[in-house]
Structures are given as C-alpha cells and as structure tokens.
Image (tube, rainbow, N blue to C red; front, side, top):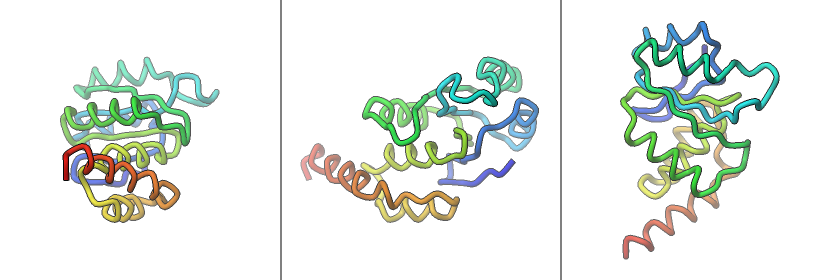
Length: 148
C-alpha cells in the first residue's frame, strides 16, 4: 500500500483492501476517513466490512463521501470537522487519493498558505493547480470573514 503524507496529521492512499487494515493499525494509524460514496464501483470493498474491521483494530472510521470534483461547502466543512477532531495519525482514502488531497487542501485553505498546500500535495503526487483559484478564493474569504 502506497501511503504518503500530506501534513503531520493526514496521510493519503488509494482504496485499501480489507486485509490491509491490519497493516495500517500496525503502522499506528488511529483514524480512517473514506471519501468514496458507497457503491461507487463494482470492485469497491464493502464499506461496512472495512468499518467493522477498522473498529475491531481500535481505529476510528469516518465517511465523507464525495464524487470526484464535486466538493460542496458542506462536504468541505464535514471533512474539516472530522480531520480536526480525529486522533492522529489519520489515513484518508478514496479510489486514487485525489479527492483526499482536494478536500484536505480546501479545508485548510483558510488557515494555511495556498502555495504550501499545493507544494505538500505535489510532494505526495497530487496536482492541485486546477484548484488554485478556488483555494485562493477560500483563503481570501476567510480573511474577509475574520475582518482582516
């Protein structure tokens, strides 16, 4: 399983198999966040089986399902809430990891420099350039909301 850090709390991977959850627990992961909608593809492992296995191994399980490229404010807020309250280290996954990187950056754009987010995602193999305008818009709106 190819696991890459996005920051000091969140790591990203493609869809894990049921038998890989033990490895994740052995590596110290405390929380798993799935960004795949249930039934997204025929080869997708059963989310309920994954959830039960993760919990049996002492890991928290969260689902913030999104379709590729479709990130509503409610999805970003839900992801941010889970990410900030989760016990680290956290593993986020989807089919390829791209949605994880996108939601991570969109949820952190109000607090972290956009160039830093893009650089971190790039180092993990995810190109956020197509989201740059949206990330900068979120960062700008957050500054406006805080009165600066």
